[in-house]
Amino acid sequence: MSDEKAVWRSEFPVAWAEDDLVTRRAFTRSLAGLSCASFAATAAVAARQAGAPDRAAWPSLALPEADGLAVGTSRVFDYPEPGHPCLLIRTGADSYAAYAQRCTHLGCPVIYRPRSRDLQCPCHEGYFSVADGRVLAGPPPRPLPRVELVRREGVLTAIGVRP
Amino acid sequence: MTAPRARAIAPVQAVLGCLAFLIAIQFALLGKAVDGFLAGRDAVLWPAAAVSGACCGVACWLSTLLSPPRLPRVC
Image (cartoon, rainbow over all chains, first blue to last red; front, side, top):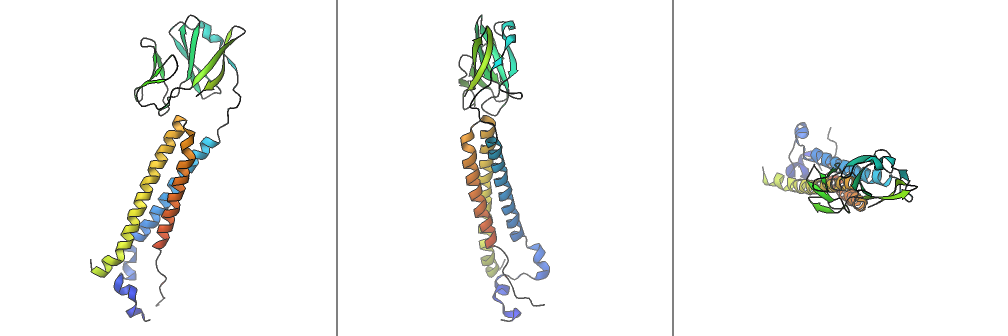
């Protein structure tokens, strides 16, 4: 078939000199690359979570500073390891509650509000019960993970996290 | 645009539309995966990655449909 009579010339009459102006195919390849990048990002997020250590056994962490807390106040401690802030709240003379400080919505740190006796996430106005960590209002989808506390030899001790 | 050229471009436009739809789905999945990662909802992460991978495979297959035809060299 001679070049002058090629079917593709009549159906797609673009000269070689103008070929760089026809960008639909190149744009399509770019979109395919974007699709691959999006998949790689999603897989990376999943892989990072999968690489987190499994918590079959939780460490014990003594909290001797708990007895120095005034009733209705709170303080932050790291549990089960540094970089995982938790909130210890003294709710009564001998009653304490502790929760992971990371909001279950988007991870903002929650704060204790002694007047209303609840935990507030100031980022998106999420509220949690200080009694059991359940969601009172706002967008958080799950209760706050609760840190289990016991008294060992008279010292308040964190022994695990219950999601 | 002439009618033959419009006919020739129509499949390209269709593939572009499909690719845009797939990428929109993938971005939504990426957003859900990041939300799940931040909120500790591990169950959504691998399914989101799997669906995103499937979308990626379809997108790559669609892009190969538009690879330029092998034309005879004339010069």
